[in-house]
Every structure is written in structure tokens, then in C-alpha cells.
Amino acid sequence: MPQLRLALNQIDSCVGDLAGNAETVLHRTRQAAGQGAHLVVFPEMALTGYPVEDLALRSSFVEASRAALRALAVRLAEEGLGELPVVVGYLDRSEEGSARYGQPAGAPRNAAAVLHRGGVALSFAKHHLPNYGVFDEFRYFVPGDTLPVVRVHGVDVALAICEDLWQEGGRVPAARTAGAGLLVSVNASPYEREKDDTRLELVRKRAQEAGCTTAYVAMTGGQDELVFDGDTIVVDRDGTVLARAPQFEETCVLIDLDLPAAAAEAPSGIVDDGLRVDHVTLSADPLPAYAPEPATGATTHLGDDEEVYKALVTGLRAYVVKNNFRSVLIGLSGGIDSALVAALACDAIGAENVYGVAMPSRYSSDHSLGDAEELARRTGLHLRTVPIAPMFDAYMGSLGLTGLAEENLQSRLRGTMLMAVSNQEGHIVLAPGNKSELACGYSTLYGDSVGAYGPIKDVYKTLIFRLARWRNDAAAERGETPPIPENSITKPPSAELRPGQVDTDSLPDYDVLDRILELYVDRDKGLAEIVAAGFDAELVTRILRMVDTAEYKRRQYPPGTKISAKGFGKDRRLPVTSRWRETA
Image 1: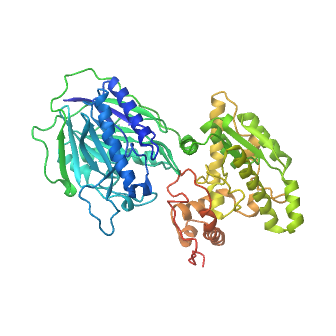
Image 2 (image 1 turned 135 degrees about the horizontal axis):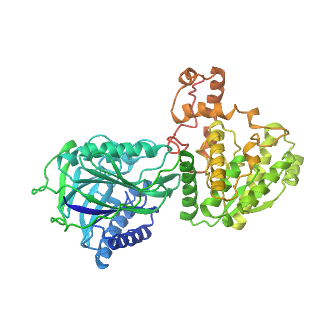
Image 3 (image 1 turned 90 degrees about the vertical axis):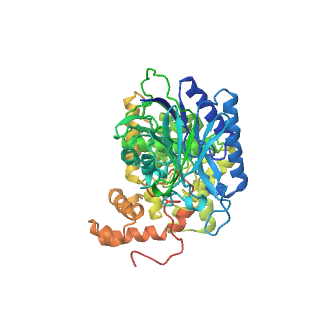
């Protein structure tokens, strides 16, 4: 059987950085060539970054992407890499596309190309366009209608892009019909909790359907609210895993494969789902036999809590670094939320770049300031203390506020102080709100919602505690100091805006609350279904009313890393003005 050494590059691209992304492709292709690779593959839209959103509708950006692709092909050849085929994702447009109602202007395409001998040997567009969750690809792209196949050293390699594997039909069965010996899918699949298990089973299933070895190469890193875990996978035609990359790391999976020889006659014509075979022969003859090397990238996968924690670190780091910020600022209350955000920030960009401000009021407990100081000692972050009592007294003397207005004033004073320090010193503020609070509106606009990024906005409170425990246990196992003070984890959560206040004064126990919220927010279950799941009807009615009436607050919250199947933002889009109530 012909042999093929495949280099699957799991990289982190930045949206719009065409030059930087091209340099990454060039550098890693050079490395792969040095390791004897015969086919080099990069993720979906690696050249432009993903998702490009409305940049896809801007003709100048489309043309810049096309020009960057052509220039990359030339540079590869100039460096002596022209004989090595390179598959790279980019933004293209349909040459045949004409302006048509219901089609994106300019007919842009989510495309990939095979670069060879200084030019584009083959290009193709994603066939299945996702239009659910965070995806709006019907808005941005026109679909491809080909089955691209390249013959490399006597092996026919079929190519696909991300959703082409996730949907039934199309390029997967077409690859079998065309007799492909290898199916390669390039992907930019956003991370969600437990998606890695679903992804593995999907790749196994598609390999069996395609009847050939299947390689799934994916993006890693972060882009705004999305984070990518990579998880590049290679399985044989029976679904047996041959190699798997670590999550949340830039790496290359290098693997030698024994593959079926291509048929003497190249596949052609129309195959499954009306796809037209687009076949190009790059090298017809098999390679001389060589001794295969052990596959790189084989790894034990992460546990659930470690996976989420690494996703949050990756998302925060990407937002800070890719937006050219140097440091972050956090209001430290001594509570679990700000403590976890601080630990994430220290792990993401280094404690030397993390600044905390403790802002005690007359209602702050002694242990709150002590816990913030202990957190700073454990992590090494910078901490200053600025009491808000004088400012609070000045406002109260002028306005005479009472009740909720008095409570929220404290939070808004803290928000104002954080933004003032941010403006003065150049840090970006991190908002510490969690998904439980945001769902119920248990946050103060222009107070604790102040910030440029919300690292834990998609994390329910019960998971906050688990992640804090995991992070401390992981540190202890390595002989390091656990970053989060034990008292921050064990004390009852409180906003400390009035004497003796705890969260359960306003909210149910978080264990119950989060289970109800997951059904309503994440799974779109209605009142009757949630009650039927065993929850008290009066309690469910109260919680759902809180969620429904807090939509205007969530619209004003900063972006933050998405880890669930339905995060607040692009995933869950509800009108602010609506009289529909599950609880009417």
C-alpha cells in the first residue's frame, strides 16, 4: 500500500492578521518539510482567522485574502517548498456568483486551497453551511458544490470543511463513491463542554461512512467570545484512533499512514448529493517504501473541570493578547468569583500583569479584605486598597438614597473607580459576573458589570466552586501554593451591600437555581417541562420571571468566553422588549 506522512497543524490564527497568519503557515510548513511530511494541512480559514463575521461582506477583505493566498503559494515555492502540497483555509468568492436576493453580496465563500508549485492547484468551498448557535454562515457565504480530490503520491485524498462532517450526506458519502483513500477535514470548531466526546464519535462514524482513514485538523486559541480547543484526530476506516492532539495547544500531529492506492482512472462526474468531482493529480506514483515514525500528538484527554478551566484561560489570554493589551484590572472583594477570575488571569498572562483593587465599604466584612490580601500573597498579583466610604458618604449626603438604590450606589462607585484606574494606567477591567447572576439579573448595571471582558460570564455558580477546587488541588499536586484562599471557597456568597447580606436572601440555593437555569436557558425548556422535572412550581415561576426581565441587563454586559452549548450573546438571542412570559 502507498505510504503518506501527514502533518496536521493545529494553530491559533488571529482574525484579519493575513500577514501574521501567512507567516505561521510558512514557518510550520518549513518545519513539516524538515520532518519529511508529504502533505501539510492547516485549519479552516487559517489565513484569515475565524469567524470573520461581516468582514466576509467587505470586498476589500475578500480580495486581500485571495491575494494573500496567492502570495503565500509563491513564497512557499521560493523557499524550496513548492513540491510539498499545503492545504490552507481562507476567504474566497464565487467566480460565477451574481447578485441575487437572499444571497450575501459578492458571493463570498468559506474556502480552502491546495497550494503546490507556487500556485493554487485546487480550491473548494464549504458545502454544508451551519446556521445555528453562534454560526451565521448562510448570512456570509455561498456553498460549494464539488467533491475536491487531490492525488498525492498515488493516494486520492478527498477534502472537506468542518460542517461537511457534522451534517449527514454530502462530501462524506461522496468520498466513498469516489474511492478516496483518505478524507481530510479542516475545521474551526468552537469549544463547548463535553463536545470532545461528541466530536470523537462523529469522526469515527464519518470514517466508517467514507470507508477510509479520516483526519480532522482543527484550530486552537480564542476569538472574542469563542475559544477553540483543537483536538485534532486521525482514525482509520474502522474508527480506531491513530493519533489525537492535546487540547488548547498549538502543535503538529505528524503521522505515517498506509493507504489504498488510487484507481488507475481518476474519479469524475456527479456523485452523492449532486457534488461534482474536482480531481487534480499532483503526484501519481507512490513513494519508495520507508520506515514509518511513531505518530506525534497522542495524548490522554483532559478531565471535565481541567478542560473548562483551560478553555477559560485560553479565551482570556487570546482576548488580552490579540487586542494588544498588556495588563488587567480586577475588583477584589474576597469572594469566590473575583478570586477565580484573578486565578484565571494570572494563569493566562502572568501575575505580574494582574492588578487588583480592594474597595471596602462600611458593610464589608473584615475577612473580605483579608481574603483579597491572601489571594494577592498566594498568586503574586499587585493589590491596592482604596476604601469607598468617603465617596459613598458624599453621594448619600447629596442624594439621600435608601434601599436598593443605596446598595447599588456602592457597586457603581466601585465600577467608576475601576474605570478611572483603567484609563489612568492602561489596564483593561475584567468583570467577575457569573452565568447564574447574569441569568437572574443579580448584578448592578455600571457597577459589577463594568469591564471589557467577562471571563466567567458563561459559568454557573456551582461550576465556579468546582473550578476553584480543581485549580487549588492541581496546584497542591504539583507542590505549588493553591491560588484561591480556602475562606473564599467556603464562606457563604455575598454582595456585602447591606449588613449580614448573603446571596440566598435574593436567590435560591445555587444547586437548585443552576439546574433550573440550565433547563430554561441552555435547553429552552418551558415552565411546565421544568416543573415536570421535579421542581417547585412557585419557585420555577419566580426564577423564570427574573430571567425574562433581566434581558436588558445582559445586553449591556461585556463579552466573555463561551463554554456552554448556549451562552448569553450570539447563542441566545431574545428580544429585550417582549410581553411573552412563561409565567403569565
